[in-house]
Amino acid sequence: MKKYQKKNGQVMVLSVVMLGGVLLGASAIAGLLMVYQIRQANDAVNSAKAIFAADAAIEWRSYNLTRGASLPEISFTNEASAISTISNVDGEQVIRAQGFAGRVVRALEAIFE
Image 1 (cartoon, rainbow, N blue to C red):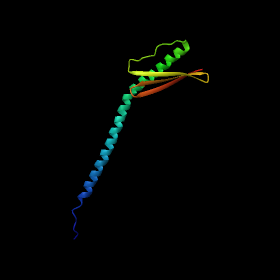
Image 2: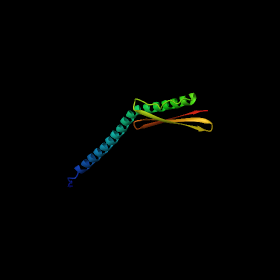
Image 3: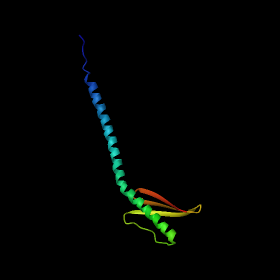
Image 4: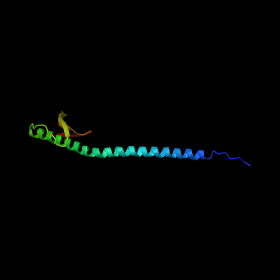
């Protein structure tokens, strides 16, 4: 007659603990990815504000360039801002603009021959 040892339950406890750890790790990673997606969705609004601010800055500079005017700097009421520069590169006028909103920055460029 064989005598059975009373250690049969250790494998079950170990497998339950390991499976629980795997599930905990997977849910932590999924939660982190959801936080990034929510943050990215919130930045979509700021991204639109920044791109429109950069576009407005390019329009402002191009109007001043083509009309020879010097209009005052543009300002926005939606917490966005923009900076623009104009330079002459090989006979072409290059206008570069950056729009800012929150932590988002978008840049545009226009070239006039």
